[in-house]
Length: 283
Image (cartoon, rainbow, N blue to C red; front, side):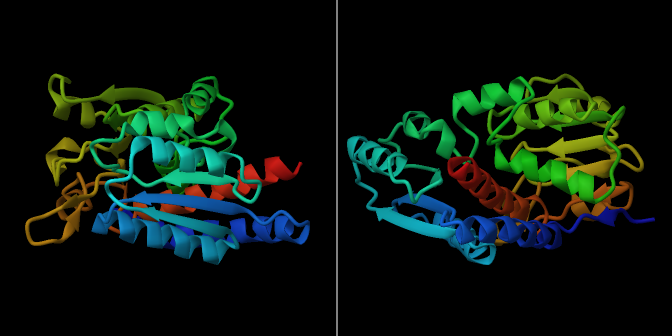
């Protein structure tokens, strides 16, 4: 029997509809949630992603403030732009679209965003709060992955979850969120010995390694839940995940597609973080 396909596009629409109710309540009180997006340069993929976020904002009743800067913008000027948004009361979330040009220190820019407006959840204080089990604004991709598991009815407590990837943006936060939900968690990476032996133990497998179709059916436990966070562009221009979807879906219990799985949920969780930040600012 084929796996249940976890439809991230449909679940993201549900989340945005729920968030719009909250946003409309805030707007009625004179506190319209606002997201500022800083885009440096003319990277086509970044521009597409920014447009998708702005479209989601409109669906959820969030006001957007779009700042587009040339690729030769200095680090000093970008810091000045961030500082201005930090002090703008209309703005409840600041999103700096990555990647930035090579001459700009991305870590320096991201850490300049005040913790209350860090809707990406990348500020070290927000990551520390997640570690302590009290997140305010958590990283959006792993947060969205947890909602996909929840709404698909995948049991997490007491299960063995294996996370492929240890980045501070996805892998490590995902491991912490699974621990918070009482899973037993193993984190694997490029130095893991006998990776397939580890993945075959997983009741829940989260893949965030950036290698197209690396996870094959023989690496998956029958009935496992597969959350494919990877997004890779093939030579023919098509997108695929880190999982060999067609083969693995015949063995897994649940699986997310690429595209249409985790990606829409990442955007939805950015919006949810903006509205959450606006609510705290209005309190």
